[in-house]
Image (cartoon, rainbow, N blue to C red; front, side, top):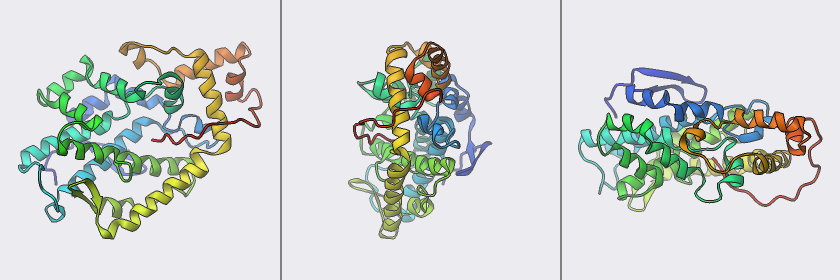
Length: 317
């Protein structure tokens, strides 16, 4: 759909070539985004699945790529069932496509080291989304947004939180919709690929091709129902066999305790940008030398708990 030029490309095992333009390249090269290279997508899952060392950096690139495909599908003339509140001109659509791609890149930049594990222990209010908005509104990224328009920063924030009019909420759902948003599709495919399990695979091309804008939001045509069902089954199996694997939950329990005991609970933006998984691992190595039980378990110096009572967890992405 877009005639916009994307002269740069990154090779990705899930989506092939992911192309991006100069402004997106500036965001990718920024400190908030580069930091995602050093935050594991699946937390401590690499202790159980050795291949699960992928990061939120490549996941965010994948979400941008998928969000673009969903946008183009939804706005293709043959697919427009409900056209109210949809931008009409090519210029407007090009602008919002750009905003969507930038928001998709930014959707995870506020994550703490080891992601949801740390956030459960250290961020009881607001999670990583609050820090994501602070980073988007920081002086460091504002110079990028201002190169597009005065409204770009505000529009990106609206897309990230799902605020605004019907159209902004549609863009939010393209990224974060519970049933078939780009975030969910990418993490299921990517996590299945890097863990080496077969549970997370489904026909996402067919699913994306059948998405439509409806008065209630985003829906799927009848020919895509089985693809949605396949996604649900893939998600169920990934949670049952991977994300909630008993051993992985024990490792997560140890990490939760370690972070609660040793990691700071407040930061300014500058210190936040310096916190990565490797910051935690360095801290853990020092604590293990001093006999910290959780650190020693996570570094394989002690046998982990054989039986731990854990609350039900369904936090994802």
